[in-house]
Each structure stands twice: as structure tokens, then as C-alpha cells.
Image (tube, rainbow, N blue to C red; front, side):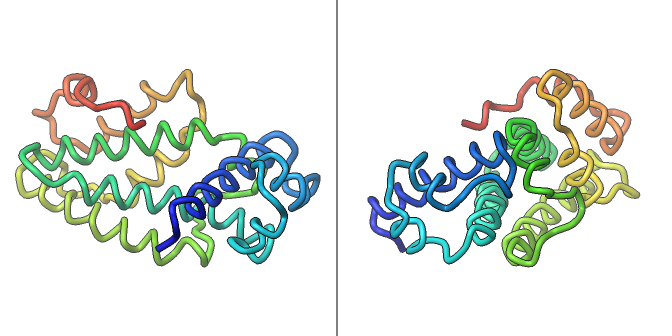
Length: 191
């Protein structure tokens, strides 16, 4: 567990790297540029990340850790289908907000870099559990696969088209009796 100041520096570095990569791409920025944008020293950057690629991977790992946390925290009184749509809504906001970073970093939907795989597996297990519960309750089509829903939502890049695209994806896997628009109206803001 990192000290609070070290955790804050790590978050500053992740945000700075994400912003700079979105603006200039991976080839045109240096570790020094990232450290300067974050307001920390290069030594601090290298204490957290041994290379620029490790920092880029950490940005993606951080996002999947958030996804896992959202999927874990969605236990409670709400229905599994409501939890699923909340997680997918948050994911679509995250991806559309980071569309320029994703493109500049060369990340591809459906291709999980090795650094992300363990965190993604934690998310997949919890999301699959929610999915099976929603299927058992009759809210999700029996033939639908949670990996498809996540992959399709992960391809949403347009902030302006995010909501209707999410409704299209959700409408494709919920059972006919589920009112998609009512379901999505109840999704909270993620941040």
C-alpha cells in the first residue's frame, strides 16, 4: 500500500501521461515531459514506473481496476441488470472520455495487453457473476455473452453518440420485457 502522497503522485503521473499521450502520441513525449506535466521529478516517475511503456500500461490497468471495483461494489438491493447497466454506462463514459488516449496509445478493443490481463480477469469474473444472475432472473437473453457487451461498449468513442450507442448495445442483450430506456435512465454518474 502506497503512502497517501505517493498514491497522489502516482495518480498525477497517470493523468499527466494520459493527457500528453492524447495530445501528442507516445513517440513525441518523454518521461521528463510527463513528470513536468504532473509537477513531480523524473525520479518520482521512475520510482513508480520503470519505463514509459509501464506507465502507459498502468493507465489501462488503472481503468480496469476501476471497472473491477464498480463490478464488485454493485452488490446490494438493486437488481443484477441494473448493476450491469451501471457498470457498462460508467465504462462507456470512461472510454469516450479517453478516446484520444486510446487511439494515440494504439490500444485495440478486444486485445488485452499482458499487463492488463490479471486485472481484466478479476473484472470478467465478477461481471460474469452479475450477468448469470441477470440471466437467471430473466432480464438477459440466454444466448447473450457478457464479453460481447463489454467489447461493444468498449468500442464507443463518441461522447455525443455515447448514450444512444449504449442503448443499442443494451437493447441487444436484454430480454424483450425489459424497458431499456427506463433501465438506462436510472444509471448514476460515475465520478
